[in-house]
Length: 121
Image 1 (cartoon, helix red, strand yellow):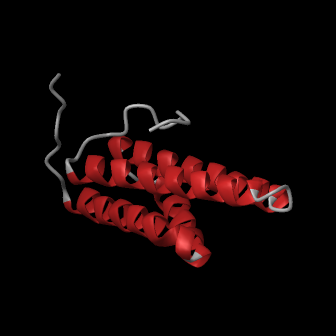
Image 2 (cartoon, rainbow, N blue to C red):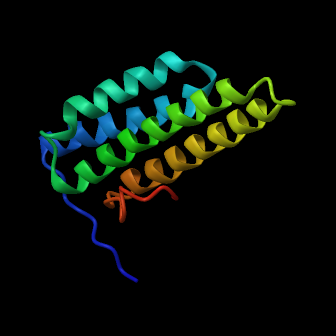
Image 3 (cartoon, rainbow, N blue to C red):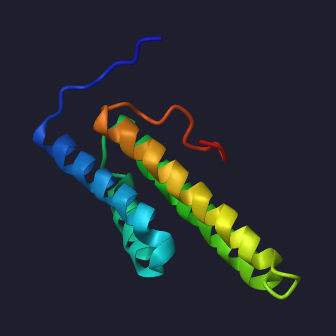
C-alpha cells in the first residue's frame, strides 16, 4: 500500500507545524485541560484555511477534542458510582493520547488522515 507524500509550500509548512503543535498539546492535554483548549482553538482557526490533506487532521483533532470532552463529562457524572468515573477518565485519556500520537505520526509523514470522522484511530 503506497501513500503519497506532498512537497510543501511555505503555507503548508506553517499549517503542518500548527497541526503538529496541536497534536502535542493533545498529548499533554489530559494532564492540563488548558492545553486541550488551546489546541482546539488553533485547529478551529486553521481548519478552513488549510490544504485538503491538512484539513483532515484538523477535523480529526476537533472530533478528538469533542469526544474527549464527552469522556470527561461522562466520567464526572459517574465518578460516584464505585469509581466507574475514574475508569471512564482513564479510558478517555488513553483514547485521546493514542489518537494524538497516531495523528502526529501521520503529519510527520505528510500523510492525510484516512478517515477523520472515525471514532477509532
